Image (cartoon, rainbow, N blue to C red; front, side, top):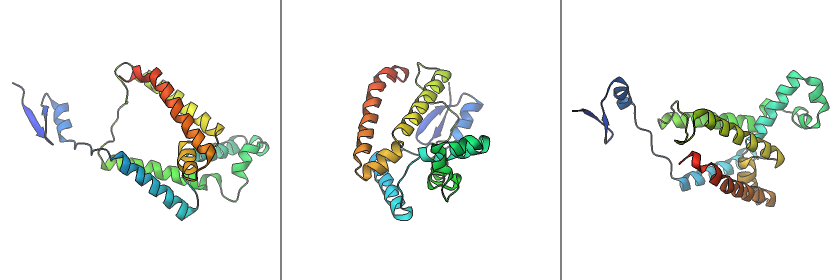
Length: 195
């Protein structure tokens, strides 16, 4: 007969060393209520406007990093390119831009939050019908499309939807409606990979 070990109201079969080690790990904290999280994001956006006079965003940090790297690798090209000059000619070093520090803070805060909630683990989130390679391929393709779209629309979902939407910019609202329409249209195509 198989013995069980009581851990946080759940019975886990004790089948060996791996299960014993798993029984020692604390259970992950429950996810935050999405409405409460939405209010929290709104308060963070308000605080960003009050404290630094700017809204939230993320894709601008990547643009600053790319402009800086191009200026190191190919300085003549960076000097001749109007896009890169927008990041390199200002009074502030590209890596000292507000968005760079914001994205670093989001990364550190997410890592800290995941650690405190016991949610950090080495895993690949995927459905039963797709392998790791396919999952990474779809993630890379989706991330590339989002990055391209962020440059086309002059902002990512945080810059356009959160900041622009809060300022009632018509273009930001059109962007967000297009994001939702595209997501719903594509969800039908890729849902078989997840269920």
